[in-house]
Image 1 (cartoon, rainbow, N blue to C red):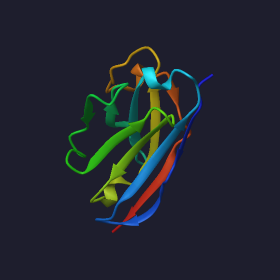
Image 2: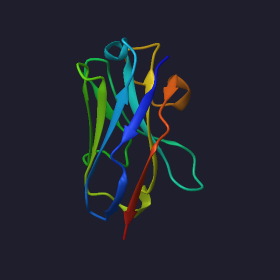
Image 3: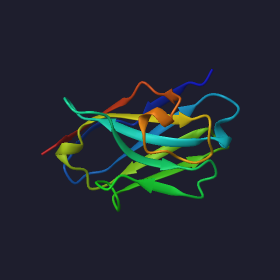
Length: 125
């Protein structure tokens, strides 16, 4: 059974940075694509970014391009999300997800099989 645990959330001022981390259990982490999503209060979950199994390709949602960076360390079973120039509207719960059926990232929730419990990010104005 795969378990994902996010950490690194917190309170930051607008324009600041946070680095989220996601620790995964399971021996097959290094063969699966990973994604980050977020959900703001009262809104649907939104795709933030994805990374292929070997970090050869990455993609980002339009609203975060140029400010967020996804990375992974397969030796440590971790994936990270570096977030810079944060905006108040980016407040929400951030989730990492594992796509166990593919080495390629997806941009839709249903393409991911395992989810973490989420970590709260609050950006103050």
